[in-house]
Length: 200
Image (cartoon, rainbow, N blue to C red; front, side, top):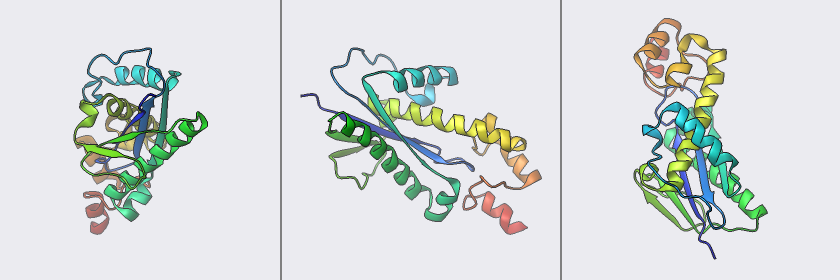
């Protein structure tokens, strides 16, 4: 019997705006493909990530789940707890798909240093998104999903340049914040957003 290993990772812990997104990923059945190469999402071009996303989310032997936590909830529960919640949502989204196939996962590998409050055998491995294929793939799915969300949000709030930096604190973003102040999708508990609000 195949051992089903689920990888899980997040995108968007550090930005000043937008949600945090997590993805869970696994291969079901005897793989008819080989995972060759370095799929570390941080080293890939945006187009390469998009291409891999299309492969991963359409391949018949792959199952995946997405979890998203909004900036408003991040402000309420803090980014660490929001990230863990997004990961749990991603896992259970994947778990429901596996249940429909009559499959039970055996192991969850979390990119990071702490385990999740989920009743499954787990390993927390720092930088797993750069070394372990299911986590690499989860990282790519999470990153592409979040980038697409930020591109849509850019259409609503074009002055901040979310299409450029996806909410991270770049020089352009900070200049836009100084000029226009924060919008509804900025994380109000994050500095410098909180500093801007205090100064008003």
